[in-house]
Image 1 (tube, rainbow, N blue to C red):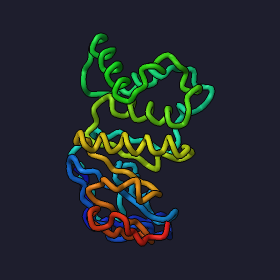
Image 2 (tube, helix red, strand yellow; image 1 turned 120 degrees about the vertical axis):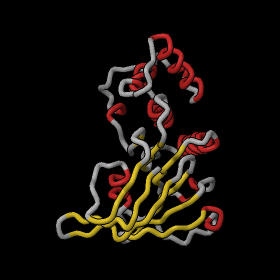
Image 3 (cartoon, rainbow, N blue to C red; image 1 turned 180 degrees about the vertical axis):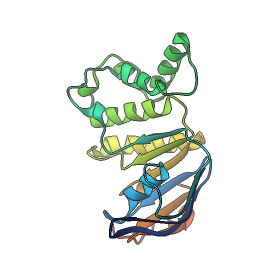
Length: 219
């Protein structure tokens, strides 16, 4: 689905990534860990096609990618939209053609899946951090993307909301959604198929099964 072959990237006079090789296969849940400034954000921007490598090649077999960042415009208190309306926005650029009845049904299904039905008419600026994250993920998934990319999506969330978010991600993994999850918390990735550590521009690969419970990386 995404394949890095000996990829390096530099900003002017500043090398960021060095000779990175990385493969993400369909249906995999892959976690990314590493310290701030280690190259995680640049890696994601390359994976999403927002940057071009200085050397090496990046191949993608699907353009149907949904991305959830640390922050989003819908968290702004001035955004006058309901939960239902925001989730429906995820169908605007969808390549899947829905008529009105199908759109309504799809929005209803995704709200039920993420336990948001009772909030359907609530303005998004009235939601808690955890509720808002569920809305963002529902919006990202309503168009049935091939890949879900999450960049530390728990930023600013309380412990309970964070635990709920991890549960949702693990449920998506069980449904064979392909996931690329950047986190500061190794325990978020206990169910990942593989974990990659990015530090000082290099990527270290470990099988998730071997790394569970004894990560030695100082975050």
